[in-house]
Image 1 (cartoon, rainbow, N blue to C red):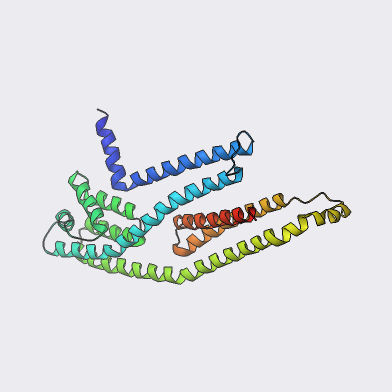
Image 2: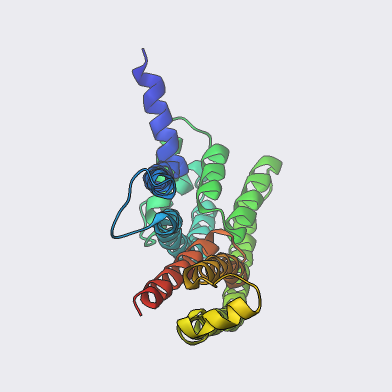
Length: 296
């Protein structure tokens, strides 16, 4: 009796595209938990590791979630963009099938036999969901949720409303295809225009890292060396510890990397998910820079 509900849940997760996301979340969450526990144990001096300190483990936690999740989102959005670019062709073919006298359900089933690259798999999911007993409206709504782009959401909304009102669906499909193509072109122009801002953000971050590296490699050793002891005593202050200053710079650079990565992703395409890969790249570079400084 319990097998049927479980199968239905799995089918819904596959159709909604959430199964892969749950797997990615589980893996990244497990790694983050492990690294945070190791970081806390190292911070409390319960255990010690020769290859990493407590700060490193917390950085590994950030890199784990941003790396795995960021890579998944990068691949996912790359596929979505390709699907979005082919979607107007599918809508036009759907309009042709409707004009040939097919019902909307048969038109979708017939069109699902065509070749639309990465979109073919999604069209077959729509046809499969309809064959399992779901309504056309429900299948199209789930498809719009899986792809979740502006052009797909607007087009599916137009198709559903046209089907409800009983209007000429074929004409609506033609208009929707043109609308989807125009939206795609506008989004492409926006990404190209905003790319220069992303480059400027990266350049500014690298300049910040270079300044920190120069300070850590030249200025800080001068003010914390043995020759600075007399100056510290004359000023009535304790001896300045180089490691503490570097730690402050380290935390400042990591915070700057996270903030800069978030801004770069939003500038890139307006989606917060795109920020994750930038946070991973900048945090990893920051960690490498300070590891290199620590070996000087």
